Length: 247
Image (cartoon, rainbow, N blue to C red; front, side, top):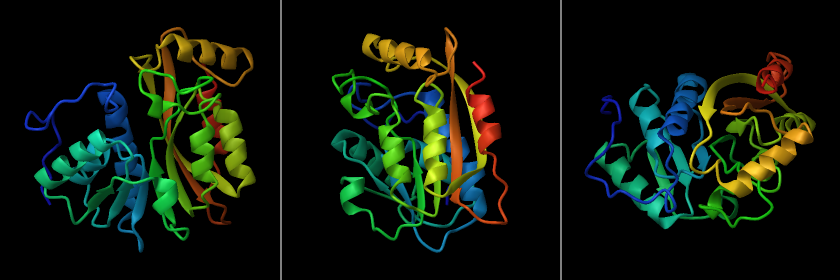
């Protein structure tokens, strides 16, 4: 496998941020979370499934930066993003390790899947009439995340925003039998998608309800590794929530 780092690819057609999700800082952090919390565990006995592969760059970056030899099976509804992902996977010779289907995750994922990764939509808004509708995460931003947790995988590594009801999300995961066994957190500035007026109004409402936590300029984004409860694991749920609600 080519271990050179993924960089801006001039050979791949550039898409509008309204067509394909584009936030280099967030994608790079997602890649770091994958590399350190998922791929470092070594190959899994079954494929790792990914909800919302996007343009594929986070998983590609993590694969190029690690020695992971397993298979990641991604699902991406957006045909433009799927096209970009396919081109990049082929360019870096990663087809044996990363495959992306232009299909709905919930319609095609095996019910027996054990390992799940995702940077799901988490923009809170009353409806999906946004710059990019597919980034809508429900009224509190956590709807898709909770739906993924309810899928019942043994291990889930998911990105969680501090302005998208993180406390209720973690409590819901605990009710489903999960524990937080690892996490990574980074500060991000509000950007193109999160600065849309409808979104900012929603997160302001959530903050008043103590369901969103952020400062004027930044919010925390976390990669959180959930695992079904085991007597051998250390639970970091309380520690994680202390960090996420600090602002």
